Length: 74
Image (tube, rainbow, N blue to C red; front, side, top):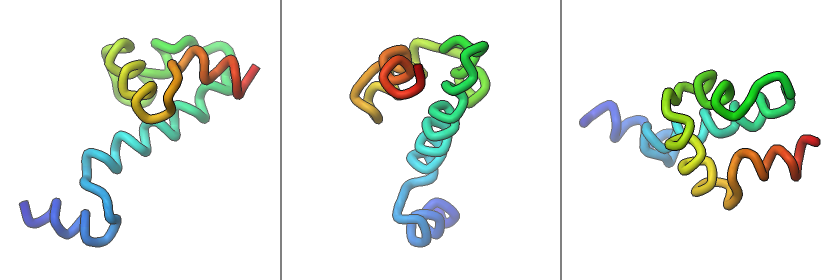
């Protein structure tokens, strides 16, 4: 698609990779709010399925969201 190729030319990323990266960075920010559990964070960044969110997060950061939160936030 033309828009996808233009996007990739300017960002050096496919649109879906850009969206996933944005969502994961936003999730990391939301982890600071201890009132939100992992499912809440997943929904806030656009994932209805917390397991899918966890799987994608682990692919990007090498640890589960729960472990990431424990290592970096608590």
